[in-house]
Figure 1 (cartoon, rainbow, N blue to C red):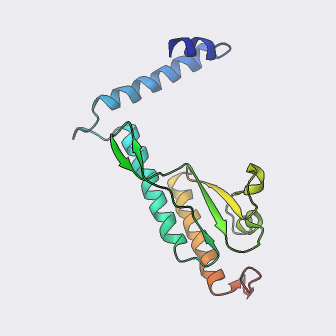
Figure 2 (figure 1 turned 90 degrees about the horizontal axis):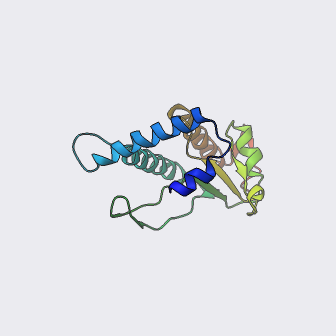
Length: 164
């Protein structure tokens, strides 16, 4: 680790290195109280937030007729020593129809990146799960509106071109 830090810090300002070291120190201190009633450390907090976001997104998507989310298997976490659900930083929504996902979401003020940008099928769109809480709630509301409109075959007051 020391060798890596020496090599990778060439050209990085001293101030940035000190700030990063302070952040790592705070995270390290939080891990010393792991599994105690004292506090929830950074990693527990982050895992809880991502789990809650994925559960919320899965609840919204489960009623959709036009798109789905991948299912991730549980995996062993070396940090906690438990099997946990995977809660990745990005959600890959899959369209069951031939639509321009990125444009449809943009019309509803949702930022997503087409799968084509990542070498995947354009039926996929990547959504970040890292937005601030208010933005994530707004994303879920807008996605719910798309689902309600497309499940009823109506988008913007017109017959849907998504589902025929």
